[in-house]
Image (cartoon, rainbow, N blue to C red; front, side, top):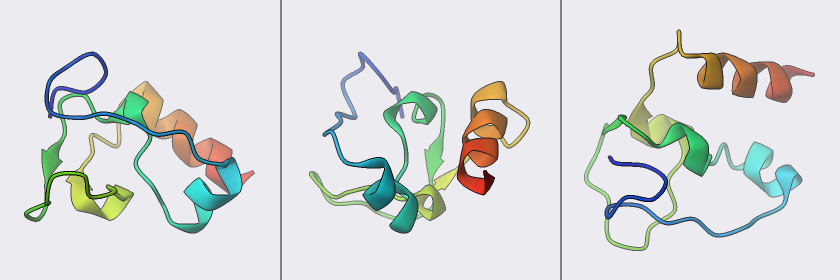
Length: 68
């Protein structure tokens, strides 16, 4: 996916509580990831829906935020 500013994704604001509870994919982590399943247009993406580079600084920061 092309992430922020691209043509394949867009974001809607949600609360941190809902994002954490539903394991939603932050728009800032959407750049350069690939989908693990077919996703319909307009469907909400979750972390499990993408292959994420776990060594990226953004992914590590997101993981630290969720654990703390």
